[in-house]
Length: 156
Image 1 (cartoon, rainbow, N blue to C red):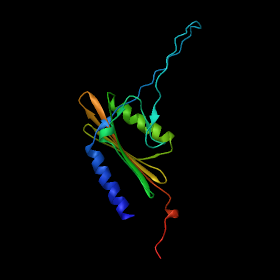
Image 2: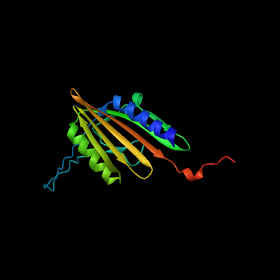
Image 3: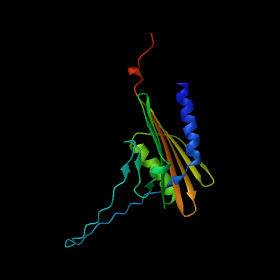
Image 4: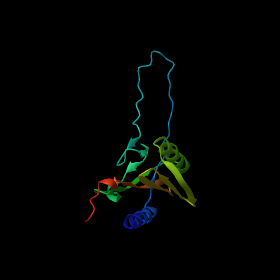
């Protein structure tokens, strides 16, 4: 378990140095004109590497600065995003949508132009680092899922 904790701490520090973010805005457009034939389709928000971390459509994934690891014991990812969004809206977006996906907010830290959100689940941990850059926002998401330890082979 100690190597896992060391890895989690190391990846958390790596994420603190990375930056990328954005927010989602929703607009409710309803037409009362029954003759209106123009449809307004918006791209939905999406899940990227983890099926329970919703990403707003306003931020773009940066594949060059992202990293994924998947093995028998755990799955981890450092996902980098960037976009032009309001920082406080993005922070609230993640707080609201992570709760909808049954994540528990452990801490919400703010320092100058940086927000760090820590979430937990039964076998998962997620740190979201949001940095306000001049004219844009950078978001780094570090997520770890510990897989079932009951299936491991013990040495005899």
